[in-house]
Image (cartoon, rainbow, N blue to C red; front, side, top):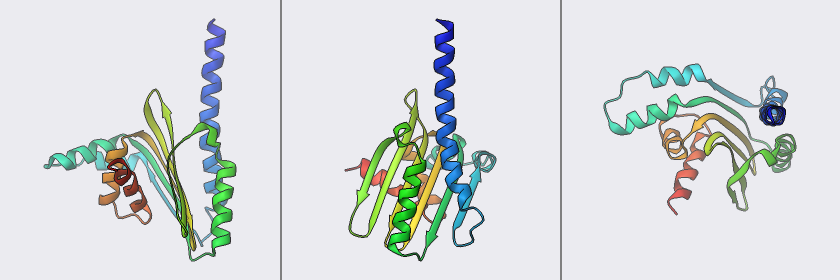
Length: 176
């Protein structure tokens, strides 16, 4: 019985590592390309935010949410044609093992195709992935840690990072 449990744990850990490695592989393919915008915020940076003093209750809640975030990575490319944006979108989905994620939300109209994927462990969201392409842009965001979607949506209002505004759609979808 012990061997079975250990084997199951190892398989689970290796599949989590593979999923993260696949996303890392996608990011690393374009890290030296100056046509892309790259943003990486480490857990250390989020930890520094969490150490700030807050007087307002809303600010305290945001700082608590930030304290649980382990990392944020964004890869974006603007001013591209629709075919290239669509190709990048498809390439991302080919690399990301989508069976490891649940689709949280999908938005598609004539100009954009956007998907929010989450990975949960024991009922806690541990990763949020947002992939979007439009007529002239591609955007990939991955957020890791213990994630409270409502707090993350609020966080998107307060951080002035290009593309982060897309996370506001999570909060608006919750209110519908």
